[in-house]
Length: 536
Image 1 (cartoon, rainbow, N blue to C red):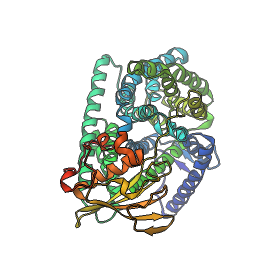
Image 2 (cartoon, helix red, strand yellow):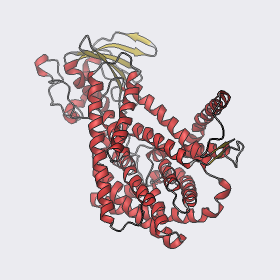
Image 3 (cartoon, helix red, strand yellow):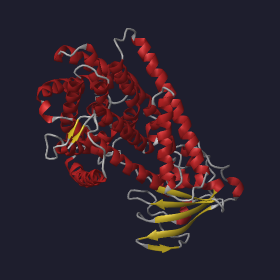
């Protein structure tokens, strides 16, 4: 079987059936392989790349695939989905304190990394400056999915997770702009022109992303769709609109989709758990398809001459460029050296560098195939080295030992349009401080009440003295004016327990004045939905 730039014959129904069979089997193998990945501590991208290589021309599948342009298009589409899923899962309250540091890493840190890595590629490997700059830019983007897939079992300080998450979401945009500029332009005579273009594209993308995210959130919160399954589809469609609008306006579409998704992810949308599950599934599907395709594109027997250059460039990137950028960017923010050390080692490279390595191939850059091979080897080798050692390093640095916080509640909201109210489905997870709290101690605002408790498969109407337990599911009915206040109060109790109002975890933290949660009459409560808080 051969898949290349030209079409040898029309696609038949038989071919389609074969393709569907192969794709479904690959998906099943990839899903099963996640189990191996979770036990070994390795990012799942390596497993998916291995599946693609095994299917390729040097593997058992003998599929000859060399269409770099198609790979780039599919890779971009997959990256849009992955960024959307990442943005939807980003909690504003966690990344807000780390936003200045993450922005510095995503802009100035990328510039430092590109400069140091390109210099090493030029003088140590002998690449010309254009090729060296392309490699430096390609490998300067970090991958949050790879980082958190190996750190998911270790509760880290919110400043560390917030910085890494925001950095990985922000740095894709400037890196893409740099790689495209180096691949499709001649010599860059005035560096400040390129910097101005990058800043302009980022500004346009940020403005469009925030606007689309806000408008989409407002619409989904005020329009009751006829089926709950339409909400996840609408959210992903809005995210794709943000990307397309940003790209068509000559801005950064990747930054636009990430920011739009982050806005929607913090807007307490209806049927939120279902939306997150749908986005998570699409994210997995995008990663599997993208990495399998990248594995097909690589030709293993051609990698021999590029292993040593990849090891040298990766060593400079990992031991010099990344730590230097972290130190220069985070020291002014007084980030402790232990956290700087972990974030220096946590700069895993994943999907984005390999996808970006196809840009010079499509642009016809000289020796672009060698660039792709070097980046491929670098990502695989250093993911194998850094991935399993990240949890060990976090423990050695004593990060995460005291960082475990109460688990947040899972709350799903379904609008009751005709009744002018909302039905909140609340799941009490393990670790929530709502365990042991009586229903009357929730102190919900007037207009909100717990109407049903589901415990171990049995449903019952609770009494005011009913003690809530971990694993319970609650149905809370709230009128429109107090819907947001009721959810904020539930989350506050989930974090701080029955004394949340006295421990500083009540609504003063969420942007609602104290004293709005007692049952003292309708005039004592909020004045409609409060949208300033943003955090879920």
